[in-house]
Image (cartoon, rainbow over all chains, first blue to last red; front, side, top):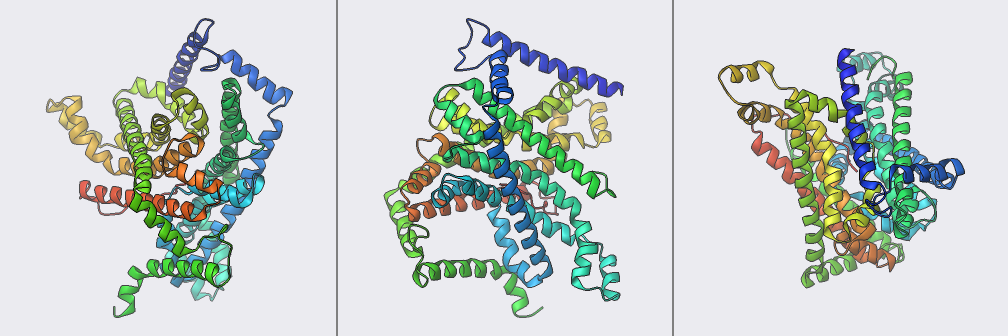
Length: 252
Length: 262
């Protein structure tokens, strides 16, 4: 406990130093607001965005697209991963290709997606789904295989159907892997949506960041980035909470 | 082990790629997908060849690659230095660990417009974004590796009169290296991703700029060609790093698990 207290005190002191430094840099006569806004300016922008509500529609747009993309990408990824595990022949053909595709920066396709699907939510969802598919796929393959061989033999000896084995044995074994992937996928879906909004969009936090940069409204950019961080952290915590509930037999 | 069992696994991915190409060809030639949606594979190949002959693609690829490599080196060195300093100095670790974990929660690509406001158009902002994107994976893995050093070995070196630097080089570094490489491998993909995003947002030249411009005019053959080059760079860079790991960490047999990356 003493150790924790020391860490907390040290972290707080770092934070205090950084804030003081920020304050000193941006005090009147220091850096201009269009370069580095003061903490006061950022607080003002946050107030305008969250309390007055200029950011509400954008938060909703980004959140909705990220959620949809995450759901679609992860579902498809897990389904494809399950298929590869259940059909061994497929694994040989598909797994190396998907693994190699891991090292391709898939966001490069975002302009193409926007050209195909337009400025609306569809291209954001597609980009997010494309990014989240891969971690989900690989986690499903690794997780569904992480079954105890003895358990598998037992199920086979009792003539359990493949579907029964999948539901009662393989999916519980895969759950920790899937949640780890979900944690990654949450961030990837946000990245996908934001990049898509950078390229072309009419609403969303990425759009706000890009549009405000043209007006040199750095305070609002800071506010939008902070909100984005908060969404990421909140979503990550939600995944953790869900994991504690669903995978109760294994403490992360 | 006879016949197909031996050569099929090695050949299988190429068969898949061949089938994908065949599907692409069929979609354009037989089912007549409009070129605006899906370019003809042959035309794409020709476009790629023309671009390569004129040196345009090499120039763009070089711009993207040099920004990615420079940013990667800066980010990785910074991250490793930070991890080493924190592993050796407990008060420093206390002060910086929590703030660094908060830094991790920022989606780095969201900083792209801010960086080009601060640093300006061109390569320097790409390098900065790449460095920011690479720091955390290398840092957190290096710290984990450096912490897991056998304390007895460190003590042995210390009673033999070795200095901290000597211990870092001879004990901590070799023992942390496998974990450091995990971070380096994750960062390779983040480096390319960040370089491309910066180019998409505000780039002068590079494959991202090429893709962006060609997408705007629905010149799909150019887009597909540039994406193919980018894919080749990504796959080659990851393979090169794996090769380097095998060469440097020759005592380590088990290959690291597949990492999830964007």
